[in-house]
Length: 129
Image (cartoon, rainbow, N blue to C red):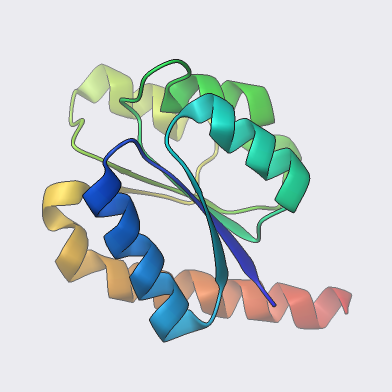
């Protein structure tokens, strides 16, 4: 079974995203409430995709990205956040993430982005299987 990791300190948003991914895409979803938990689950569970918030306690999303270094990982990372500060967005994009979505636009964009990313994962899995 494919695995997804949702790293977000907003309990309601995290639960909504988890339920959507499980229901529509049949993924096993692991949850972390901060970047440190996310790093630990990333290393332990080896997810196929990560959904990451930026503003979190302890270890934030940028620190998470620095630690796991997406350029050395084939795991797509989708950043879902309320942060639209241009400098912060540029730092996030410089880490080689798959996508960046403002939470306010999330509902309308999520399904489209998930479909694209899931198809990409399936193609890659078939190639390396």
